[in-house]
Image 1 (spheres, rainbow, N blue to C red):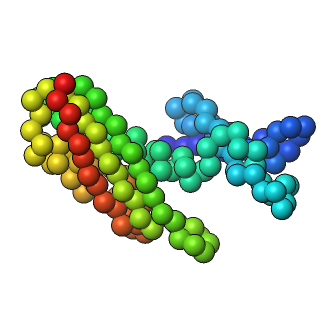
Image 2 (image 1 turned 180 degrees about the vertical axis):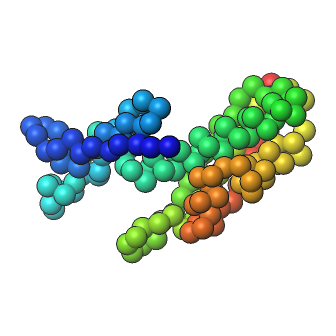
Length: 149
């Protein structure tokens, strides 16, 4: 897996801290920093997600992918899956994630709660590289709501 990240520079109205990432699969992702009123040259223009937000979003995508795949392989009629991630970061640099809570909402027909619980556990214990990696610095907790479709 590879990715090239390029600084977009500080020209005109563009952000001083904007970046474009091109993934090995040929997709583009933009990132930007938060505005810094005290030192505008160090801040962004809030034109795209922060880099750490993309880490959190990628982790949510990784685990939701696993949950859907595991439920489908179990022949469950899954019709929707979302996960809301809330996090806390360290106060001092490096500002790593220290706590992450993942709240899943799974919609389907006749899916047993135990199957959802098992799918989430399997993702976090075995399959989701991102959450397993972040679990080295953060306490990760999960919860879920099951909605009958």
